[in-house]
Image (cartoon, rainbow, N blue to C red; front, side, top):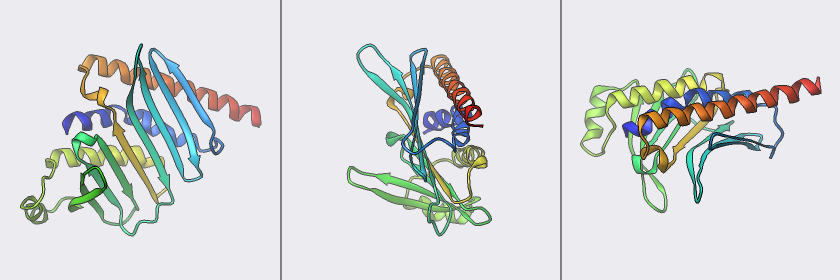
Length: 204
């Protein structure tokens, strides 16, 4: 669980940049490859934008992460979804000025089934009750996950949901290579931002 959370934190500056691509056309595909990393950004619909980072290999390519923004999400309550580690996926949605709820999903091959459901900030009695039935991540991990998610979503509309899934490769490399990979992804993002800035200036 900690490795997945660290990956989420390391890439937060890249993820925060996605909200700057609001003006790209539907189905427009932006991509850039640098130092063995391919970054792809695609606005799938008016309400969905997807960012994928891939490590390019000689024989195989390996997904680093997949990130998506869903806007105008019709939710009654804001939610935090924390998927189990072997699926390596997080999801966070929030509607400001309301209670945040934490949901720990148990995934099987057919569907995602809700495990624990907690209000956030965490309430000791509620956590204790849930612990008798479900595996819950440590409070430190939940707090870090929420802080990172709030930072990433600070530039997004209120009624919004984000999902983040790490690739298998993120659990297989050492910290130094991880940092190099993060830097390569950030370099790709800066290039895409520059291209988008140039495109916008040409339309003025």
